[in-house]
Image (cartoon, rainbow, N blue to C red; front, side, top):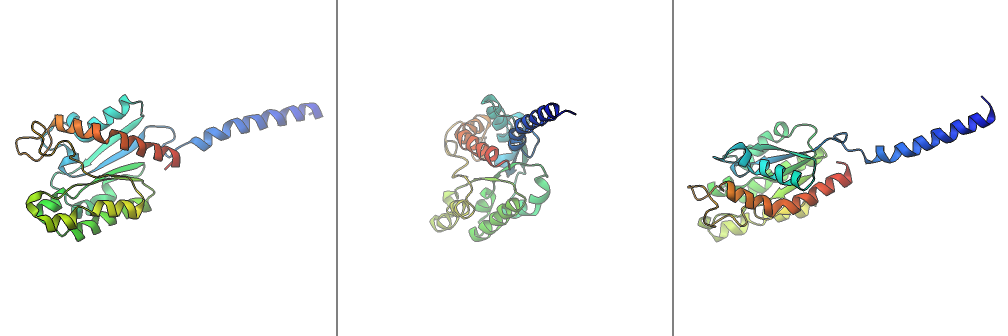
Length: 221
């Protein structure tokens, strides 16, 4: 090969290399496919007595896609689950390849009067395990019901903020904001949201979760 031909070959290959580098740098853990989110929680996440398409995860996925996000939101909610139950299944309910977890647990702990200190310990352990696996967490808070009394609420309600601060993770303070105690937003039990109530929950959490998706894109998981 002549000197000119060798030089031209070198230049072409260098240009190809530089052109390919940005694409490789921007690649994500899912090789350019949809972002894989898991909604991990209790009946509020599972969609108690609702059609699958009416659940929080289904409505959230639809809302995110309508905003142009390529995302899949898998429903890993289990009705009746406590933080202890969540801790026992966190490893196998969140599969490899998950790029973000929306963690919502604690409502059943409060309803059963479980020690807030134990609830916090369980949530802490779940977040720690997910962080060890390199999976970002979006934490969703719950407020203790009024019938549990002021002392219980003072011990329970701050646990989500403490965990958010401890791990530097985003927090949505109250999952049922705009739904709890609002007429026409609950099922007949007066506790669980109906499809309309879930739509409000999705509307209120949409922007924070969009920011969460942006953080996942920036870090590349």
